[in-house]
Length: 224
Length: 225
Image (cartoon, rainbow over all chains, first blue to last red):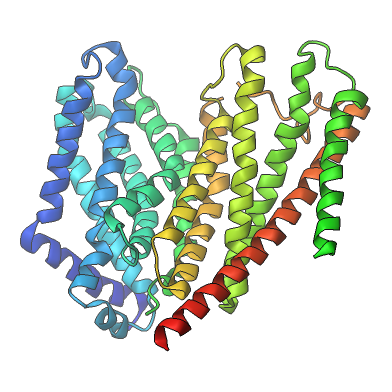
């Protein structure tokens, strides 16, 4: 079977596991909502300030949520003792990562898109005219978060204090994503919106660098 | 034993000579005055720290490839020494910034990226404390080290592109940058001295790590017996 066919099968498995309970999606959505509401108390949410900070707050909330959401990614396999079975089922361990990171990207993107209208209403920003651009930024950003996060969740699952460890490893690593996505999003939420192409290029570069690293080193992350 | 002492003495006198040169040989900068002297140690420490992290990266790669414990020892030694140098950078920076910029800390490009770099390697050392089994610890931390090092240019790039107050690079900067020749000579002498110190510290730390490993092995044997 080819890389693509293998990945699709495993991706199906990831999606089925999640949509059976929808635990991850619901908890993440609620978590982001709580963070957004709490942020609104720290300054006047309807001011011009909000427009400037809004994008940053949104992305901070996404990153915090992602660092929690990616937690069970490999932990679940470990507690159910399914990691060895998973490894035996494919010849190339990169497939496992590819399936997991695609699933994580989809989950993140879905939560982000579900929360976008609520954010737009709460913080009084116009998102409809630039919606397709926002989807692009959300996709590229979430992809980067998922690539790095999936790799690191394989590391943290094998350590003590794993719940605390993942955010500690992941968040500093995601600084470039936070900066680029925030700048892109705030340019799009501006009164005269525009697309910062260098930001798009930067996100693509991040995604490519880490995907290549994962392709090269992924198999070692899953060694028994 | 005496060899180590000798090398240590040479390294220390190099660092002493660099300090002497920066105060008494290099001319005093016209606008900043005496405080500019910190530059010889601030920037040179940054270079030494970056070199140490590069050593750590190479050691991480070699560990993943060859699986010899010595590369793990080298990785952790280089990371700790690099972290010490970057800590010096983060402390001397604000000391310089207060009289020149008027504030200790500003969220400028290189300050912020150095701080993120510092955090990445703190995470690396933290990860090591949280994995018990030596082989697993070595492998996982090596892999994280590789990811962290790959992230460094991206962090620097992003911060440089989107937010910036640090003086433009003086060494290897654009046209119009550059140092007065004596200052330049003194600066490169400091870079040399601090690199010597860095190598010396890594070698010492590496020896310590080896002893620690032997001790662990002996303990394990004693437990089995």
